[in-house]
Amino acid sequence: MLKKAQAAMEFLVTYGWAFVVVLVMVGALSYFGVLDPSSMTQDRANLGASGIFVEDMIVQSDGVTLMLRNAAGKTLYDLKVGMQHCSKDENVYSYSPSVPTLAADSVIAVKLGCHESAGYQYAYDKGTKVNTVLRLSMKVLPDGLTHIYNGEIKFNVRTDLTSDGV
Image (cartoon, rainbow, N blue to C red; front, side, top):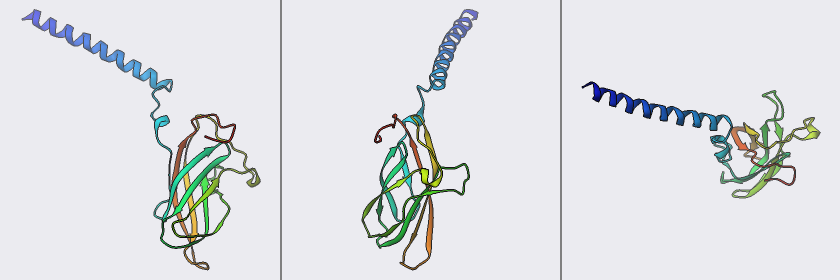
């Protein structure tokens, strides 16, 4: 009876040590960034229930260019998109230039970034993980009220962006 118990304990201890070694290896790989799941995630952006969809984005050293589609089914006026990443102040947004009109089902490119003209000098370095708020303001009627929608943008800078971009 004792020989069977001893054999069972040796079996469990041997596999227990193997399990500990695997855990230490996974922990070391995670610590040194080899198993960083955030580097494998997809870049994404959304603008809430505004009817404006982000079709594509390009990350560059001085900001992000978004390709926006008007899927609201009607013409929109005074469209501006802002990104909250230029300042530590949560109420400061770097806005794109205003788009006077955006016809239904049309696509525009909007450049967002921290511009020196706004008093900010910021560039995205390789390995930077950006997770910030997007703010869209628009009017449904030319002289109507301004509607504001909050969304989010998440991206990882995967390459050195000293040239034109990704």
